[in-house]
Image 1 (cartoon, helix red, strand yellow):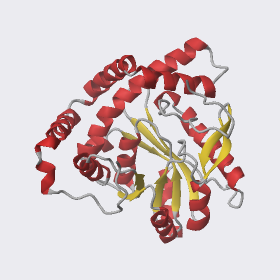
Image 2 (cartoon, one colour; image 1 turned 135 degrees about the vertical axis):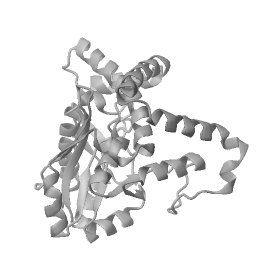
Image 3 (tube, one colour; image 1 turned 45 degrees about the vertical axis):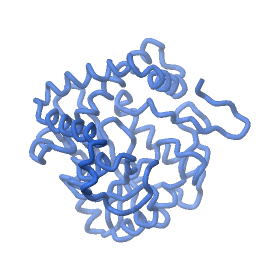
Image 4 (cartoon, helix red, strand yellow; image 1 turned 180 degrees about the vertical axis):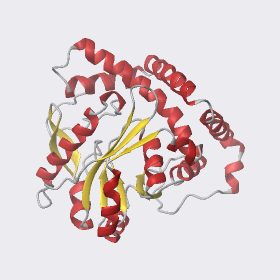
Length: 310
C-alpha cells in the first residue's frame, strides 16, 4: 500500500533489515551503472528495452493498442517500428534514471540543450507562478533533474510502497528540485501563488476523480483530469508546456520551454481539458517514440461503454 503521509522520507535504522537487502543491492547497481560511458548506456539501454518488449507481453499489447487508438491512419509497418523504438526508449529510461539520481551536475549539463529558457528571468521578475505542463515521457526523471540544475522548481511525485526505495527516490529527485506529493493540491496552489515554478503532468488517466471527458488524439472521449483548470484558476499563474526529448543522433537532450498558453479557458472545465490535451498532443508528437504508451491511457470509459482493452 502506498503511503499518503506528506512527511519528507527520512532514513530509518529499520531500512537495514535483511528484507531490504535486495533493494540496497539494486540501488548500488544503479549507482555503478550511472558511471558507465554515456554511449555505452545508450547501447545497453536499447538492448534492455527490446528484452523487456519480449518479456512483458501485456505491456507490449497495451502500448500497441494505444498506438492503434491514437493513430488509426498510421500504416501498420510504421506503427510497428514506433512500438519497437518505444521499448528501446523504455530501456534507456532505466539508465537515465540512474544518471538523474546519482550523477553530478556537470555530467548532466554537458548533454543538455536549453530552448526558450531566456523567458525564465521574465517570469521570475513578474513574481507570478508558473505551472509547467509536462508529459510522462520515458526521460522525465532526467528532464526534471536537468531543469532543476538550471532553475530549481517543485515537482509532483507519488511515494513508493517500498520505504527504502521511496527514500532513495526522494533523495534522487530532490537533488535539484523540491517535491510535492501529487495529492497535496493545497501545497501546489500555495507555491504557485508565491510565484514558484511547479511541474504538472495531466496526461494520464487518473480515474473518476476531478475528471471530465475530452478528445485525445483520435479517441473522442478520454478521461482527463480537471486538475489543470483547478491549479491554473486557484494558483493565479501562467501556464506553459515543457518537453524533454532525446536527440536522435544519440548525443544528448533538448529541454524546451514553450510560450504561455494564453488562451486557457479558466472558467470552463470541459474546454480547459480539451485545450490542455491539444498541447499535450503537441508535446508527444515532438518525439512520439519517447512517450509512455505502455500506460492504459483509456482504461476509464463513460458509463455503458465497453473497455478499449482486452
